[in-house]
View 1 (cartoon, one colour):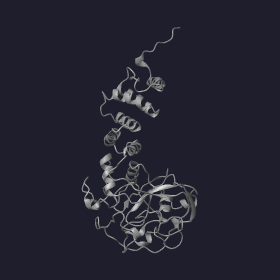
View 2 (view 1 turned 90 degrees about the horizontal axis):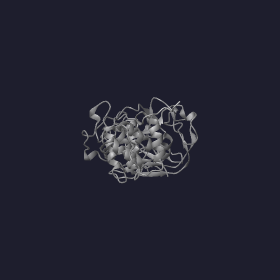
View 3 (view 1 turned 60 degrees about the horizontal axis):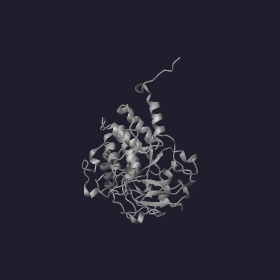
View 4 (view 1 turned 45 degrees about the vertical axis):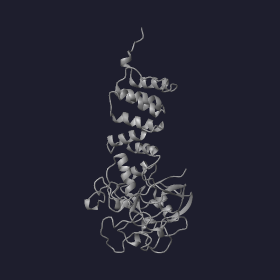
Length: 368
């Protein structure tokens, strides 16, 4: 029996990709030529596999060929942006920004592309500032006083070294993020009277105020864009109170008007931007490591899902929180809360999709 002859046109794409990757592994862009006979869509799949194999120079050749037919194809623009960034090409930033504006907000690769954008940000309009928190053990949680049941039991936690944002993320920083990525504006979930931006314009008097009206996903996206992440609940608490068991970032003395922005009355009404404090406004409230406004001003999203009983079984080293939940943890208290809510071990939660006038962002990242 004679062997069956298969024409090139009917060769399965998976075989073409396999052969191409084998050939491309030893070929450089200078001598690599596009695979003949592929459709633009199949060429995009081939380029994606090349990029995943670390063969960005050759992938760029296939992308350029496919883009002759598919100029603004989402997948091709994404591969192009990734490869330009990995190859250190200056046009990478523009391509990644193009993809972020082209792709829907819910695209599953959006987080990865925000991380790619962070790689291109050698110099940024409003860079984040950091204070280091060294590795080691601290006592987490609270019992007695203003503490509630979900703050106990007190327990020892060991954390690797990390960096925490010196300040809460400002409107100026978030505005730079929105301009760079096309991310949605920080708008209140429920009442436009709580918005402090004028559409996509940023009034000068709110630039140094903390950004508000951001969801947990918004906060995560911003931190990724900045080459960072949200702090874990344990990281946040250690950064706020240190290792000496203090109640507040500044020590054990009760809150006062020169240490934190909080409400002196049981009910505090929103007064627009005047309700918020500018960064670096409460020097006497500085944490042991040099972070400011970790008590009051705005609640801050952290990574963890909330579980009121989590401390009873949480790991003793680098806890990450429960695997699932209904609310995400927020920490620190806000302008609308009274002094009894400002202690560093206080835990609270919120629906992660909602954007409120009293919740903002502080980022963290691993220490190198």
